Length: 352
Image (tube, rainbow, N blue to C red):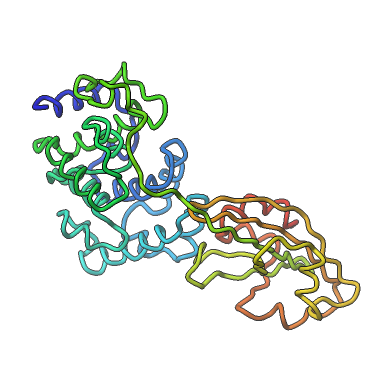
């Protein structure tokens, strides 16, 4: 495969998509794009990237932002720990590196939330350091090229494919090479229905030669999802609604939600009313507005929303003024960072 690097480089230069983070050597912008695209398709991630860079154009701006400002920009991307890690890393860049992004793989790897893949991508693309990147697309390309049945989600598999990636790396053009490998996996060597006839390196592909390309890559684990039943209470009075900030080490940490009751199985409106007990005065109506399922990588959420409206002159029990609950004017609710599950339903839940 001595001419492999030059073949994919020429293919990439001719066929690669024009994306803003590919038209810069700014390590900050490359970093932001890599973190956004970890769990997001390019088509969706592009808009998020552009808005994010517009709001926080450099590490200093990101470091100076409040957590709420940052999480609001991150709404819909999920995995909110990534946003918090970006914040911490930006502060480190400002305080420990005088606002200048670290320029070597080893130093970049020390930043909060940056692993070997992201560090290699930044170091190779921004600074030309010879480091191979191995993301999901590259795992797929390598596993098919070498028809390697080693599971990519095991330690031995990660070591094997990293070694193969080093063997193929173009040390003179590591950044372009890495982007070409990722683009090949995204556009040609797709998970299903790969476009093998259009592949510039088909001649090297052992899996394609035996028409077994769809059998690779191999994984040892199957994703199992924990099921949770969430009951959100929309408690309103005098044009204000109760919200609370999630502070526990769970999904959506740092985001806002409405008061929540979690049950171990599906529960009816009557059951929720009984759980609230004396907190609900006689005559106060609890109305279930809608219910929907929401999938996270490792969790399946069954979410129900309940509308509870108190008359103007009826005192709301102290129960609902605990756990750092906040009363927010309805017209200001949209300005808070909510999980996408709640954010997409706000217009139905809250009336200004």
